[in-house]
Image 1 (spheres, each protein chain N blue to C red):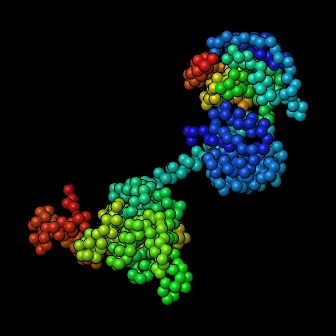
Image 2 (tube, chains in turn red, orange):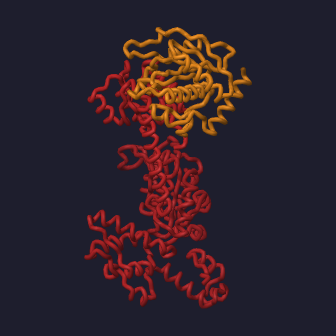
Image 3 (tube, chains in turn purple, blue):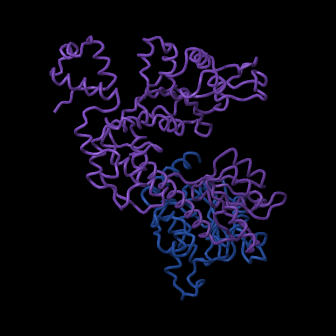
Amino acid sequence: MTKKPRILVVDDEAAMRESLRDWLMEDDYEVGVAGSGPEAIAMAKDKKWEVILLDLKMPGMDGLETLSHLRRVDPEAEVLMMTAYATVDTAVKAMKQGAFDYLVKPFYPDEIEIQIKKIVEHRELVLENILLRKKLEEKYHYGEIIGKSDAMQEIFDLIARVAPTDSTVLITGESGTGKELIAQAIHAHSPRSYNPFIAVSCGALPESLLESELFGYEKGAFTGADHTKRGRFELAHGGTLFLDEIGDITLKTQVDLLRVLQERTFRRLGGQELVKVDVRIVAATNRDLKEAIKKNEFREDLYYRLNVISLHVPPLRDRREDIPLLTETFLRKYCLELNKEEVRISPSALRLLMEYDWPGNVRELQNVMERALVIGRGKEIVEEDLPFSRERLSTDPYPKSLKIMEKMHIERILEESEWNVSRAARALDIDRQTLYNKMEKYQIKRRIP
Amino acid sequence: MVPVGIVDKDFIAYVAEAVQARCGLPCKIFVPMGNPVHAYDRKRRQYNSRSLLQHLMQCCPREILSFIGVTSMDLYVPVLKYVYGLAQMDGRCCIVSLHRLDPQFYGHPPDPHLYRARIEKTVVHELGHCLGLTHCRDRRCVMYSSTTIEHTDYKQADLCPTCIELFKWHLERRLAGA
């Protein structure tokens, strides 16, 4: 802390508080004075005080009661209790209530100086600790999102830039890539972080249920509606609403959603009153919405409303360098949960993990690690503990996923065509534009050796 | 400079010379003030430095840049057990006590050289406050906060380079305003 702390002196005796104020001002502290508990509380609400020197014996609201209020108003302020009537009992009470220390008046000039220095050092240590942790976290972790690959570092950077704004975000990526974690990270680093984060799985619910989930209903709106229920939009008021699998909602729900996004108001099912909401929208999908628009399955106007900021999460196979870090994290997590002693992964097993294509992405890796820990016998995860083998990976040219098969096939044909797109399109029996679209969809790029 | 109560003349003369030498300003010695009985606290057996300071402020001649009261009596402020001195921050008056600067106070043999050095540093320190200087982090600077006598002995009687600059700036401002 390069700036000196602001100090509030609370004492009902004017001579005491003024002499302390004058003394502290010689040290260039910014000093405020209060003559009573209520005055101190009002001043603490108005301005941040790093240190509060609080007299114990005051008429009306005494020091202990004032301390209790101050801890609620500003938990970070450090309070030094002062009294000329020290007893063990009051000292213990004060410390239990969160006082930093206890001084007996009159004190030696260096006593107060030492205490303030202790507080300053303590705060600097706490702040340094927070900053160091943040630095460590930010480097390879963003909350629970883990990754040291360039792709993930770019995502962390984008989250940092996007989070403080109120802009709508559309997160795209395959299933299991951590889209909800990213939405949570955006919320956690936004000014809305102290308000709710409400998630809705739009793909999991039929249209009628989704509507009542999102917008709520009035009592009597339909059979079984025996009370008024607030929907997710209302529950997320002031916070963030995460709309997962947004690509799977019906056109009717898209219209309702578009209206809310445009006007920031809606009516509950069966309701007359317009409800106003202040929410930040983060949406996610594993569908190609542009394709869906072409097929008239998704509204273009809603797409542009949602796609203000676009964030694409790459599949795990495109960031294999993150696999060791993810593996380590999951091993640690499940060892703790399963109450197991530290388990390592053998180099050959790790190599196998690096070679696998991960159609289920990070979620699949997480499941594989949990399974391996449960069935594994030794202190090391070996190849046999994994649900796939080297032979299967090398001899099985036919992955189960259609998308992966299509991507692998396109890559092979492009290689054979020496990356001549026209030639490759003819070989694939599709037009050039379709091939370009698929290359963009699967992020197929020519690898320069 | 004004003695408050009974103060050794030699010390007063020494301090006046030292202040003149260090600040480059003439230092006049005024007629001593009587014992300030109104400032005496019987319970504490000390004199209230704030009361003394207020008295000095009332008596301070207009043409004076700084009015330094020097006393042999033990001083306190209500919240502290004792003070070596008290100054009007960025004001004109300050009061310095010689009581706890005497090596004999700590049970040590008389040491006039050490005693004078301590007085000089304390006066210059309080004068610095009068001219607007706050405490300095440099332990060797005379503006370092002396909460114990060891601090006083460790530091020098000079201002550090930063405090010198600030001192000059404050002085110029004060003289321009006078």
